[in-house]
Image 1 (cartoon, helix red, strand yellow):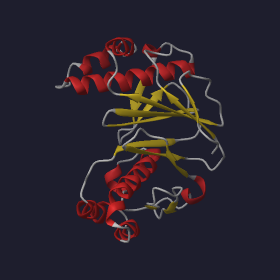
Image 2 (cartoon, rainbow, N blue to C red):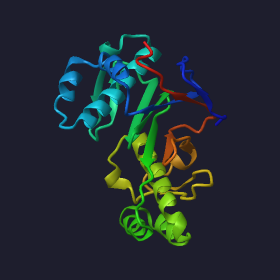
Image 3 (cartoon, one colour):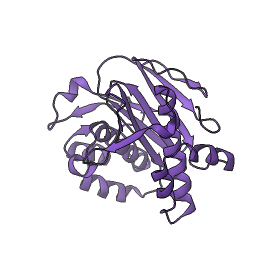
Length: 250
């Protein structure tokens, strides 16, 4: 993976590139209006079903931006795009061909949208919440692989919280790359937990070929967050990291 390049302008998505878009879930009124115009009629109706204004705003921001960017990459109007869902709920683009892959994640006040050509990918963003170390360890014992829990117990207590969320983001990105329910297989593979070291997929008994065919990477994230990318390819790639601007790019 090459170094990230920060830019606010969309560029063509090349075969050897991954594009990561970071956006706030607190858009201005004009941004919200522009992104809402990208939604389908069914999505606009869905917005009204959310009970809170925060949920409505977040849905418009994420789905509107997704449509806007996919429309840019495919050179079609955002409102013309049609989505489907896998049995486990992962969205995919209907009629867009297998070459364009995407994944989204949001937490707190931010979201990440990831795009690639032909390489299935998963992205996860986690807000670092002040969970006491003892609770982090209880959650890890319940949900993580035994090796991950053991690694957490060997850390100084001051490092447990960050390592817990780092591990969680790496694991969820990997699960989302496969488009399956995180609850089913969370303890059935092992990743490294050290936030200061490159992420490594240490063991995948249920998908052993991923040890050579899948990459894990930590991503730049807003202060107080951590993020990870899982890519279903062993080939080198260039990561482009974008900050979303105002409105829609189309």
